[in-house]
Each structure stands twice: as structure tokens, then as C-alpha cells.
Length: 187
Image (tube, rainbow, N blue to C red):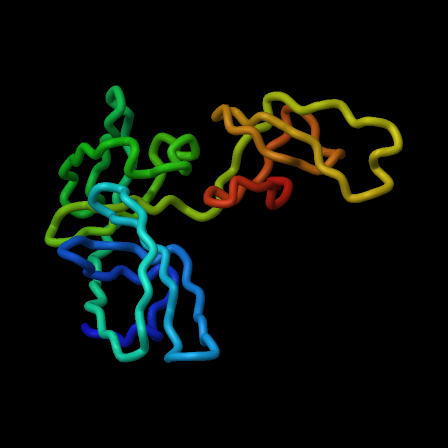
């Protein structure tokens, strides 16, 4: 499906220069002279390259529809990850770097969505929020609680995040996977 250059939105998957690209950021610019354009930051889903491209409103680009299928994470095998198709029980091995910064949040048995293009997996999407345990948290500094300050803490998966002062070691919390930020206390 062809779309105009000014209709590009973050999260769109585009076919550009023979590759499949995911739009990360956009900025609409209307200079004093000349026509308006869209500055688009994209990441190649096949090899991980990033690029910035300007699209004018007259430009058209092919928007790609990806098939999304639910898989279950089974186990890690070295740097590779093994997933199982929930419908056919077929196993699929993918490189671990396909997850990027979200990799430490992947848990055994977790349900994930794989985006497929021409039956080939090109990205893995984890749930946006997960539950994690704090294994180490700094002590509260007296007088610091008057303002809304945060302190560093380390989760059971080794990721370091900032948490409110009242959260201590051994507390189960909810974490935003892609922002790597504290959301709230788990019930």
C-alpha cells in the first residue's frame, strides 16, 4: 500500500531501497522557502542499520503489512533464543540481538509476538510491562524524601533502574520493558 511522505508515522514498516525499515521518529518541517517535508529516522529490520531520510509530501513510499504471530519463549541456547509456535508447536531459533535492549526482560515461558515478513521473523515484541524482583537497592538518604527523588536499584535480571525511595530490596515491582522504568509496585 503506497502512502504519502507526510502520512508516515512512528511504528510504520516501510519498504525503502530494497529493505524493510521500521520508523522510529518523525519530525514535520515546514521551511520558510520550499515545500514541507517529513524528516524520518528509520531502522533496518534485517541488518539493524539506522538512517535519516527526508520525504516530501509529493513522495510516495510503500507501507508493508507484517504478519504477527504469537510464540512462547522456551530457552536460550548460547546467543540464540528458541521459541515455540502456539498453534503448530513448531520450534524456531532466532538470534538474541533481535530483541535489542529488551533482551534481559525475556522470561521463560513468556508469550511474545513475532512479526513475520515473507514467513521470515524480523522482530520480536515483548509485553510492554513485566513483573520483576529488586535484588539490590541503595539506602534512603535522610532529607531526600522531601522532593520526588529516585534511587538506583538492580533487578533480578541484572538491569539497573531508578525507583522511588520507599522501594527496598526484595520488593516485586512492575517495570516498563522498553523505557526500562519503574511503573508501580506489584500486587
